[in-house]
Length: 341
Length: 180
Picture 1 (tube, helix red, strand yellow):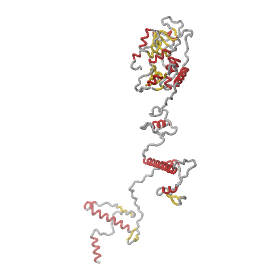
Picture 2 (spheres, rainbow over the protein chains, first blue to last red; picture 1 turned 90 degrees about the vertical axis):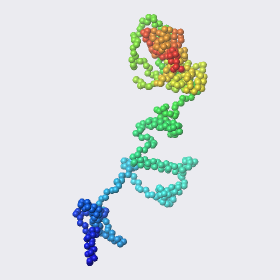
Picture 3 (cartoon, rainbow over the protein chains, first blue to last red; picture 1 turned 90 degrees about the horizontal axis):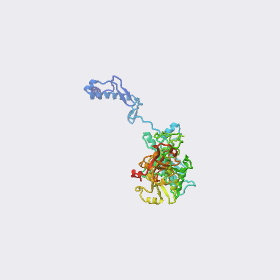
Picture 4 (tube, rainbow over the protein chains, first blue to last red; picture 1 turned 180 degrees about the vertical axis):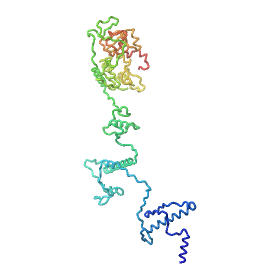
């Protein structure tokens, strides 16, 4: 008994060996689930000043003791020679270390479907499908898929009118490849859209840039000739023509070539032009007496004929605009003006 | 050298018919050989096939002139006659004006023809008709546009303009460097 009392005495003296009892001014808040103890008591400022390290060590030890005490109040069980307490669910809400993940941006199709209210009842596809022909499960994609495909497609079905000289097996594969690359393009476009990256447009330009089909035609014509070889090796669609309005300005475009003439044909054409022009000209009204000689000498010094025209012409008067006897039908070069009717 | 395009041919012919009317056909369809209109550096030339084939051997950048220059196309697309065309206009002219010897010099200096200088005028000349100007001894001096019809000429003042000057043979000296 002496030994026990000795030990207890020693323990009382030794600060490190303390009882499980801890006295606190304010009760320590303990969450067993997350093994958390929160001490709201204020620090002893004097002890901090004198012996800071020891004070904190002591304080921590006391709080941990309280936590341990509480843990041992929980139901325990024995697992392999060790006593284990089962912790309840944590009550304390820990803040997240990472930010909340953003919702995944919708693909173009998903957005379209959402706008239009299209609900696809497509179920999740399984990774493998049963193939009747091969009598086994083959993967829909990925590993061993092409192997199964080649096993399956040892023969290609072709219509009666198909060209027998073509390699239909390779045609089929290229068609598939094209489909795949198109899908890849769409995937990348969706990616760019989600990341808000501007991608240069391909195909038909949008109406933001070109309001008119004629403008598009103009743009196409200009674009075609914008190569180093002024569009000489650029392919054309069947029946595709250059835009008319800029044809003459575009280098390398086929200009309206003058037709080659057979000998004598040019003369005939020119005579035709003359005939046309002469027929257009208004007949000149002959004022004088036709019985007189054509070339009559006018004697300006001689007295004037008595019959004077009433319209006396004043020399030196400025002609007024719009009163000239301009023939509106004769075509002249230069800017075309609107004719008043 | 190029053949004239359809539009340009029409422009040239319209201008020529103002002076020689239907006689233009005689210029186009000649019995002494085929003559044609060709374009080179905006200038219009009237050449025989023979000369044309010879001229085609000269590189276009070195070719200054061939045949007879009838005129040129202005930057605004109009056709302007040159005095060099007079050689072909004078014999076929339908409307003529004869100048008194005193008025000849005035006209050859590039002035309009006043009533006082008018010797003779073709009957029934309409206003703004293209006319060829001759001296009294039938030497072609140039061409212009009638400012007044023949009837109006009789009553006009001596100082009033009868014919607007367009080209005269004085240009051969005055604008020697530009005229080819």
